[in-house]
Image (cartoon, rainbow, N blue to C red; front, side, top):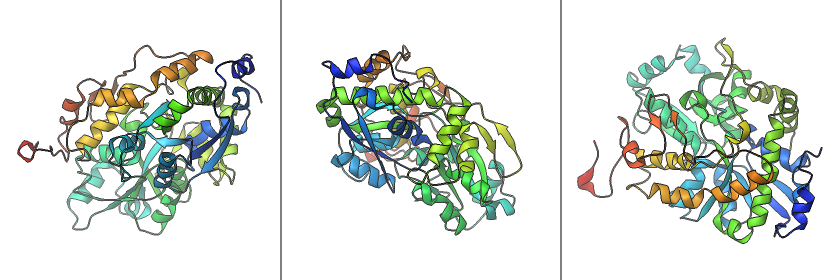
Length: 403
């Protein structure tokens, strides 16, 4: 397979040749690692002078540590994790980080256990009643304390009137271990990326109560992340990497046949190591929730969207910082726009996209309406962070507690 531009080899031979030809690329066993697996294994990297060595990681914390230390050059990364490291709230101290491009939008799920299903806790209203009128707290798992899934879980619970830090317990479980924890009764529910929500449904271990795209249609999800030092030392390599992954992202979405072949590839033991029937349906947008409901999701996981998915919008990075602020992970407002401007590698992305003929949105901000009716457009993030009824917002100066 060689779907790269005819001038790719000319580009590699010129002054833009990669400074580093062999890239160690981290990923987690999740469906949304697909663009990196396809780029590495299906001939999209070699025309740009790159060899991509895929390195599967056991947890997001492990991936983070190797990315910051330089053991990994770049990685399939949680958007929020990159910003948590940048801000020094991820447990490892601050490091200058970079978002090269978006890898996907949508495609995560909130599942509840079979025990809750058997107790008819199968709707947001029933869950709220269970939380508010029981003496025992439910335990929900997410994948990283300052990661996307924590933010989706918190946002969804709060939108239903459940305070995620006071009304329930939250624990961290690596994505591929979620189903085992649910089966063992250690958790009552989880928020995780596919294929693990689908896997739990297929094994009749519970049901999908909500999808992340129901929280925010076409929300930002995983990114191609690295340290800023890597970009500064290897700008041509970083640009070539984005070009190769853009080509792979475009390929996946060219047809349902390509999505099916991608699901088959991902099911292998080196990648997700799980049956293809847990991967393919939701990759195609076909959902079954375990309660007898079936639908084709208009906002299922997507990897390219004619470039809309891959653009490292400033507003996407800023949104995660507003949620850190909302839930007390930041005790004061950062310089939202300045930090996003440093992390999001907009100019490098624009260069790479232009080189492979991918359209670039005119604005680095985008507007969306979330499940609670709030509009997010990237403007006035400090006010946005303070606008929620449920929060854990405490200012650095004790006399300025927001109530």
